[in-house]
Length: 224
Image (cartoon, rainbow, N blue to C red; front, side, top):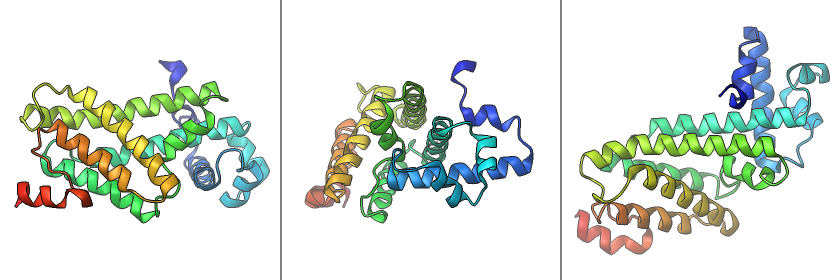
């Protein structure tokens, strides 16, 4: 287990409060640059300038770019998990609110950028084994967080009885990732809406009505 402890968790134990703030500022700046430009197009000099730190400060916290990228992966995974934990998937209303939150976020970015964690996987999975392991661990934690809520939803009888909540969590995450990719390249979240709405409706035996534009008449009939 220690071998897979995040770089962020290892390093936090060694830092003063001021050092932790400086390191966090560097990681925040790197995460934003990587999200906007990609890993290959974000240099350490770019990060140094964006974080407003000296070269010696940057190298004090990160030996090289690979180590900084690993910290960015941890950062993005923690941000996603923080948002996911705020979502209450233990009720029909909470499931709808989670779906709406995802779509609202995508619309707010005009469907640009894709998933902060998924985009890192696309860039690094085949070229950086250590990064791939960290990204995979982030997705595992994300799936577990979704499953935690869905188990309560299943226990309340709001999911089809044959549905395994953990399997549904993986399926929802896969649909989310595919939908985010389509939204990014099409600059339109409709495919993401369709994927989530269809999957949720099927899993709930229709007790959660589709919410996309194409399902307006169905929603009116079931909900009103």
